[in-house]
Image (cartoon, rainbow, N blue to C red; front, side, top):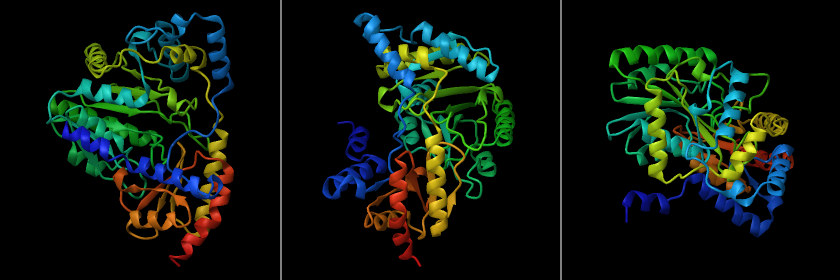
Length: 394
């Protein structure tokens, strides 16, 4: 067997391990007595237009039309609709030929990393805290993954550390904003600073350094904050997008890669993405849901529920005495562990049937992540348990 793949298969991510623990506890004592904050599985239903569109397609279209192959880059109509929607929102000039429909953001990222790298010395950087699977995706593409240490004061970009790590082997840096797991939205000021730094390094090294935007949470922003459109700030940007969160469709695996024409070697990069998708065996993105997106590209699920949950959990835990990073977007709360070892805190929390994810896998020690895309009643009912847990540290 391939030893790397065997190891990945036998050692699931800590998030999945904890999710399985939570399922077992729910079977033993009842789902209402277990406070599971592990998975970023949207709790709000899809926009009503999604179900209406599916029903209409099944009633009016032929099976071969709904379920047959599309072109490898995706159906022209859906790509044209997405391009026009982005242009309307961001004042851009994208065309359908800049878009490649994929099986969600995970596929988009894997394809992009493989398209951008060709030897083990090629490096892709991520900013801590980061989504745990980035390392798996980059190393599976045959490249080297490197982590920029976190700025523990702001949880934005740690520029002194980043500048130290950039070198002639750097091919790309991943930007995930709103961020999983911190909920922080990178400020436009920080992103402009990043663009200036990368432009300087591009000139120094004589080749492009791409920003790879991982944007599944782009539409989940609170308090009137705007999420910057990074291709408008830095030309060498690739966007990897998913409708999993914005339309509450995580299991349907539908998203896209956007390669703007302004990006360096954009035609070759787009072709390399097609080649990487072919090599990975992605024949085409799910055809039925490409058609759904044609009708639903400009709508989102109701995000107000997440804002309500954010306030319930953040206010509830800080009142008890927990120190938390204030989430500006996404649906995660990053909570500082009352003891140095977050894994020990996680084990203590289990005694109260609270299931949280330790931060070690996100590239930061001493925190836990709580996904608050759960029912409001789960949050409210969990607070007395959190209070009892905190008493152990007082």
